[in-house]
Structure formats: structure tokens, C-alpha cells
Image 1 (cartoon, rainbow, N blue to C red):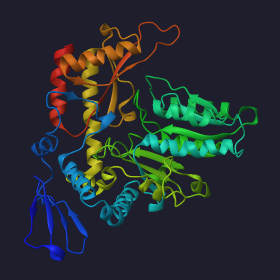
Image 2: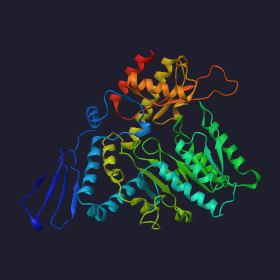
Image 3: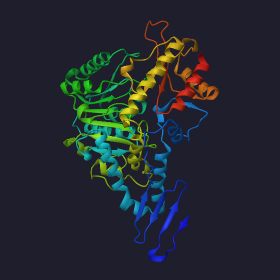
Length: 451
């Protein structure tokens, strides 16, 4: 800690860390937090600079699982520490003078990134699972209050994220709603297969004079991972009279194209700690302006209840809000890459497809979907000799890969269909984020394992 020669009313207290960031309290009691800008680069970020930004990663592990937890560069982590220290140094100043302005700034940037109409349509929450709870809570109230009839339907994909499935059970089934799962084929060969099954599910939901009140649609399914044709499915929902559409896009922003005006859904949630380089955890929740938005509330009720979802979500009690405040720093880091986020998405897609084809050729298997139906993650069939025949087998194999080969990769068990013989039942989901060191390490280790 270093202090200036001033004291009493004219004092300045300066808290330094190793990165030469400063938290300064001036004589009027107000504080200024700044993260010094890095020297302006004459060119885009280099491979060595990328390695430096992610030097905190365990270099002994080939982590091909960016999809689960994301990754955060040192530049953004430094900015996060500044916000955390500002709160700890003077919580009252942080609350009254920094928090709301900082979150509004992040929301404004997100609004532009997703092409929303107005910043009031954008809330920031801690996770896409929380966003799902907000939407499902509103739907459950509609059932409980008699706005929806018992037996009216909520439609979701069979491959919906497990936590969201549990939320639908907790909020919808208990309130009297009928839940319909859309069975999706896997491996999948075309968008038409998904569209056909979705139409059939909506027809089941409308049987016997009932209505489909909510459709919960993944933008990119988690396991197995497939990019869903959401624009087409939203259009079908409008044609078939579905009341509301919620897109669960945990893997959306930073991974695939996200444009609210093009998608046309009522609600869209996406994590920013997976593919947008923010620290965990932060998610956006887009709510298209309509009279129904007034019924949306954060499930954690605090002092801001009733002031609108965005304001409610910006303060749900004392906790670490720094992930929500570093969106500007994450965007600054992203813009150091050629073509920014679009360039990153394009290169990630190209690289993960290249890796997937290399492995499927080496193993004599196949991809889980055509390359155009994946973004920055892809499914590859595992060699049949591994004998994956149950979920338990995938857990054992994943543990073996972690402990014996230092490879971290999610595995998926696909139960064989009735009468199916000799089909692949084990798949790996690999992710590619812009870090060449991890990719090369993975290729070396996976080659040693199976070739």
C-alpha cells in the first residue's frame, strides 16, 4: 500500500497491485477506478500474446471443454479484480456511485451486440439457468392463477439442458402444465429432421383443444451439441399460435450469430462466460417489449422488486457483481482479434470442424452432424473398441482420460434404437476456443491414445 503526502481532507489513498492498477480515493470521498490501457498495438493480437493471456491455465491439461465453463483472459481478470477491490475498499461508494452505472453500461453494450431494439429489453443475471427460471416462473404463475388451463402445454427439446428440464418440472409440471418433449434424431443429418419433429410435437400439444403456451428451444444443444434452426422454429410457433417462445442459448453469444430482430423470440438467454471471455458467471436475458414483460421477476426478491426485471436483477443483495461489470473489458479484448467476435467465431468453427474430421477419419467413425450444423463444438463418434454401452461407461472413460492422459473432454452415450445393431453409442464433444497451445496439446495426446 502506498499513500500520498496529503492527509486529513486533502488525503489520497492509493491501493496498488502488481499490474499497476489503481483504486484512488480523493478528498471528496469519491473514488475513481481505472484499468490502465495496454499500449496501442500496431497489429492484431499475436499467438504469443494469446498464450500469455491464458498462461494461468493448467498447461499439463489438454482441456477441450470450453463449452462447459469458458475461459477468461488475464486482461479481463485484471479488470475484475479492480471492481472487486473497489467494492471491498468502499462498499457504499461502490453501491451508490459505481454499480448501477457499470451494469447499465454493460447492458448497453450487450444491446448493441445482440441487435435488440432498446436497452430496457436487456437484463443481466448470473446464469442462463437463472434466466430460464425467470421465464418459467412467469409461466407457472399463469397456470396457478388460471390464465392458462390445466393441461395446456409447454414444449421443449428432448436434448434440452438437464438443469432446464428440472426447472420445467419444478415450475410447470407442479403448476398443472403438460410438458411435451420433441424427440430429435442423433446423429442428425439436416435441419428438416428437426423441423419435422418440432411440428409433430406442436400438434400433440394442440390436441383435444389444448394450447401450447410456451416453447423452450435451445439455440445450440449442450449434449449432444447441434445448432438448432431457431429462426424457422420461431416462425412455426407464430404460425401455430404458440403464446411465447424462449430460446435457451447458453452457448449463443460469441459462439454463433445472435440477432434479436432476426430471431424474433420473446425471450433469449445466453451466458457470457462461455464464449465471450467474461469470468463466471454472467448471462444476458433479452425480453422483447410486450405487456407480459411486467410479470417477469427475478426469483431472488430484494429491494428493487417491482422496478422492472433489469433493475431487479442489478441488485439481489450483497454478492460479487464484478462479472457483470467487465463486459466492456471483455469486448476490448475481443476487438484485439482480426474481425473481432465474427472473426473468432469463424476461426473457431473452421478449426473445430478440422479437428473433428481428423479424429473421425483416424478412428474410422463419423461426425454427429454436418459441419454447417455445428458452431464451435462438434460431436465425434468414439472407436467402437472402447465399448461404450452406458452412461456409466462414459463417466469411467472420461475419468480415465483425465487421470491417465490429462485430457478433459465430455463424452456422450447414445442408446441404440430398437433393433439397431452395430451402431456407434459413444461420442466425444470437443470445443475450440482461440488458443492454439491447447489445440496442439490435444492433438498430440489424442494421437498417442488411439493411433
